[in-house]
Image (tube, rainbow, N blue to C red; front, side, top):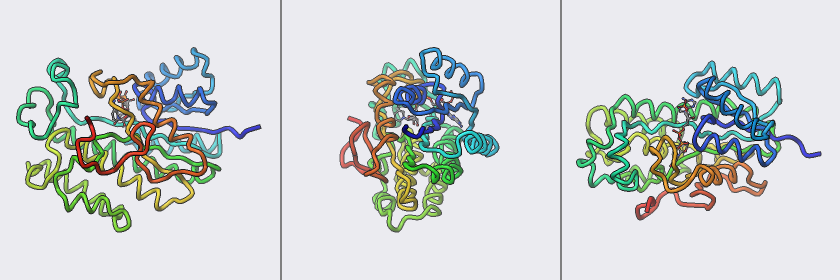
Length: 304
Ligand SMILES: NC(=O)c1ccc[n+]([C@@H]2O[C@H](COP(=O)([O-])OP(=O)(O)OC[C@H]3O[C@@H](n4cnc5c(N)ncnc54)[C@H](OP(=O)(O)O)[C@@H]3O)[C@@H](O)[C@H]2O)c1
């Protein structure tokens, strides 16, 4: 009999995360659907159980809360003794979106740095939301990943899937030297990557985004996913026994996009699920655009 595989999905109560749980469960994986909110998470699991997926259970997890992470790690250690798949899906966009105007604009595809000055009544990016976005999408994702490495190393086929974004493409940076530095994975370090994220936050707070070539629109989210992609590559280099990859799920109709996406959550979950179930010949340290291997640094707008 095949050994059971156990997966944790962060932010599994709604959107793409919920659908990732459903699709993994349909492939026979034992899924720990996590949510920062107990009621929303239990409700999501109740729905999946009612649809016939008895192999989905709930555990509370706020990825920014170290005690919540360690409680989950203890639970997995006690009940399953290993972890096979960690899907880092939880994220925030770091923006105030004025839904009506945003939908009239046509969504994120029409949010361009060249026209940033025309967008002030459509999307706003207060510093505090940007800071929180980096905290969740980058720092907390790192913390949870590192907390589960020991349990992943007890699996025969460990996989880490970082749900990234087309906004993690280095195309969105306007600073060529920084792009080169972030591409040079042989010389990039964890410490330097943290420094770059901190440098961005300082520039964001002091109004120096343009001067230093940072993205002018959806700035914190783009930097968070650019940093997540670089982190993915550093982790793949460091842990040769674990496949660590990042995936853009597509432009999907969810709360994050105010339902402006082109595709459904069913489509959006396909890439992350495929990457979670990669066979033992890899790859690792790779960026997937949905189900296809893509580029970390595009020459033309990767969103069109
Ligand atoms: N939708 C797209 O077009 C698109 C495109 C590219 C990439 N992505 C990426 O796909 C992933 C899922 O996005 P989505 O569109 O499904 O977004 P969503 O509908 O906004 O769902 C985000 C999920 O993350 C959870 N979350 C946020 N902060 C958390 C924290 N600190 N701890 C635990 N959970 C937290 C949310 O929980 P609550 O319900 O409690 O808020 C929610 O479950 C994200 O990584 C996103 O960046 C989405």
